[in-house]
Length: 115
Image (cartoon, rainbow, N blue to C red; front, side, top):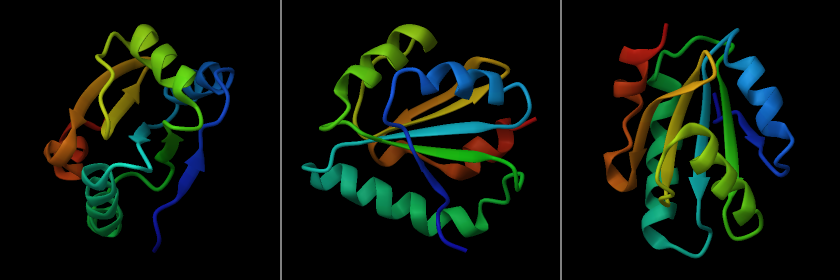
């Protein structure tokens, strides 16, 4: 199974994403397409996804920071997290329950937090 990326391209999507998070886990991966560390973290995430054993309905959103930087600022403000890149966030019940960056991103940790 490939990684089920959902593009995050509009600030307005965050409202729907928050609503979704009350039904199932939502993950946001913030990625800088010009950063080799970010590329390595994305590749690691893609390799881990098939074995992550997250609920089938879990959504994984992909934010291209170079194209949609204002969305990252809104995410930081809305969820009370510091902007980093690369960064993975788990949103559940409208709140950020997991926030990791760089090579600290681990889907095994996310799985332990998913309700």
